[in-house]
Image (cartoon, rainbow, N blue to C red; front, side, top):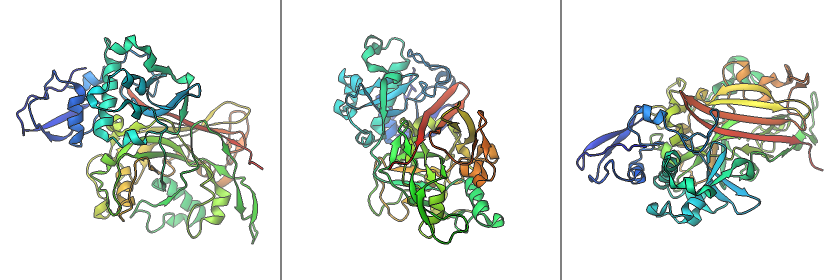
Length: 477
């Protein structure tokens, strides 16, 4: 891997290029950053200037041709261009921070224990931890430098890591855990297609959106204690429901359990109470993204949500993917979002590309049958982007903390096969979907497994999220 040759005199305004596109301007403080210097030294300086990138390379072609000596299947979400962070353990041992590459996990504690991060002055014990929070709190100047140093070592055919195979752990031999300790969780309602579909079903089809919807990113505060990692099963909830044509509710097991295809982003930088984040600064406060299934009990939710919004119909479980994909890895996949009309208020306005081209799909596997792909959509359709969501959330001075999770809301596309919930796919139960084994579904039944996947692709570069899956089990007691 070759470095950008920075040989301009101090104080000169320069540009860095990533995949042929300018990532921003910065000034060289000295002439010490030369081609011969350490990659991470330059990255650490650049990160401090709020310029973030997956790698510093001379051209698009060089990045496209970057490969790893670790075998990576062609369809792997975890290419050398990705390198997401997660928490893993082996044989019920201590939890540690790892980076995914192909079908392997890079043990960052093992690398640090061998002194590879000494130049970054990072205590090796930060990698032996139950959650990523303390690591994320080191700041992007450090986390980016570590990720890029690992990328450099994994792409160097002469890397000394080749003689130290203990740093690699097979994903099949590892147990993945909740990646962050989530202090607070907020769920938005930011897909105009989803909001319109719901409005048509439950309100006036001619005025599906409420008056405020195009003026602010609607959201609510959720329950973080019931957010679980992929692979952990979900118990069917119980609650009050109002039977058809009844005047009084009954307490029963929900018969309308649903999934919601969402993505979440992890806060990577604290704010102080009273402080607001601008859309132009929002990416500095976002560490990365995950897949998110915000389970719902539609019958419980319908009875309870007026006047204060979702409660027990949502708080019984939400599932999160174990690997956090950094914004830096997602940078090549930025695109323009939908036109926002009417024009938003100044604090929600933004410049540049803020949406992401992320392919998403949902699979449903019944107890006796194969997996069926029931939805295929894209994150690029989101009306409100992450920068706007964070700017709005903090506009009243609400403080953000490292590890907080902000979810997108259900992601639906423009056609029936791209809807992000059973509520829409089966249109409230009126149009059941048929599975390959002949079974029909209006909502999720006991022992159904829901699998969500997501990835970005541009040419030969693929950056993905793996999957988030969970099986619905019968209610307890």
